Amino acid sequence: FTGRAYQRADTVVDVAGVPIGGPAFVVVAGPCAVENRAQMGDSAHGVALAGGAILRGGAYKPRTSPYSFQGLGRAGLRLLAEQREVTGLPIITEVLDVADLDDVLEVADILQVGTRNMSNATLLRAIGRSGRPVLLKRGMAATIEEWLLAAEYILSEGNPDVVLCERGIRTFEPATRFTLDLSAVAAVRRISHLPVIVDPSHAAGRTDLVRPLALAAAAVGADGIMIDIHPDAATALCDAGQALHPKELAELTADLGRLLTAT
Ligand code: PEP
Image 1 (cartoon, helix red, strand yellow):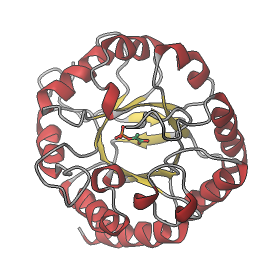
Image 2 (cartoon, protein in one colour):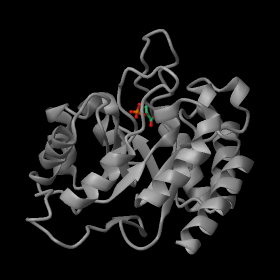
Image 3 (cartoon, helix red, strand yellow):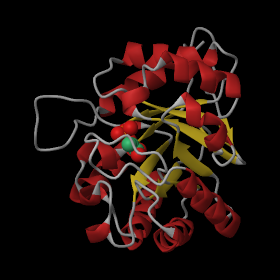
């Protein structure tokens, strides 16, 4: 179902009125993890001011270490729902486990499947049956073919609303946390009709590389980007080293606007 042979025209996924895969370049942004009401409120305000279209925030966090902050769970979902009321922005948040799916469905306008769950067939099938739009991140060690087969699990359950997200793959290079595979974006757009967005924050793991990688994602033909922000990155409980300040997000969206109108 994911191939151009099945469907020639680009899929446009409607996320509570925000089209992903159409002519508009979509900016998704927010904190890596939902931490508290003030942090979520400041972040949501910053995303709205910067012209972001969708608000992100992790309530269930798949951390590398079990001793790191694991997210606020349902309390985090409630804070996300509050900010949707305040800003009107649709919400994306990760579902880590089938057991949490019903709770996440109450809040998420688009579900996120993280890199560590890309090949969790049980979760993918359950999300497929839910019918809710889904952002499917590429597994950090997955080939493009494996990534598209993961998408097939969702589509084959009758859910056509899949957005792919390139978020970097594991290579021998330690200068960045992962290696952002922008060639995958160009390749997938040829193979598949599904929209593709890029997450330069989790790929690089470094604030200073987010802007150039985001601009490169737009130049290579991605349908959007997902960016981590934090009002006070020094205190962030999750991935502090990669979060932009909301003001830097606004500068980035202005730069993206200039780039996209020039091309
Ligand atoms: C995230 O976006 O919050 C996240 C954990 O990303 P990834 O699954 O790409 O590591």
